[in-house]
View 1: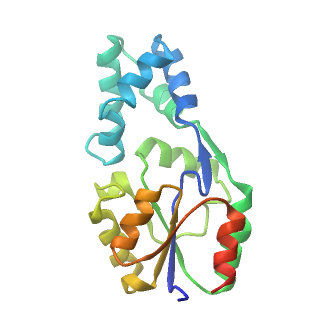
View 2: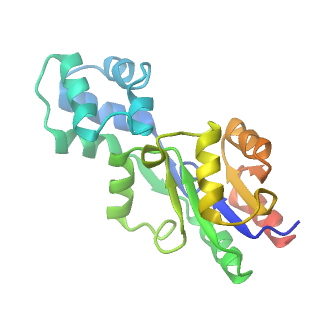
Length: 200
């Protein structure tokens, strides 16, 4: 069925990212090893708390400062945390094709304030000017695959659940969309997604 609204995921769909790259940059600033920084941020609940808006950017950096017993510059740490994205050029024709079909698009992403502000500043063509609404986990206080963020996104889309299409690189997030009554597909690459769009 042709959808009335399409939501795109951000990471590894519109933009590729590498958390390890960010961890290495943050570790250099903090004077600790990559493994130590990854344990502090990724192997704890810290990144999840940040992405769900449970803590602010200042609190995020403060928690890392406490863990390494060193005062860290907020701006430097947040830039290091966010400078890890590479735009996916192959998604642009898909976005253009969906627009040509007259189907509105939104963005549904698990992300934190630092990442989103960095992305906006870069003015990536994969992000700028395509999406309304933009549903971000840190603002929604909920992250995929939790049901709440899908409910918020559905309300903002303003169409029935069965008329929403969603693509995400993570199967658990796609399954949650299906469970919410959406059409959904695991993102493998832009060519495969284009084949789906061309069937509408």
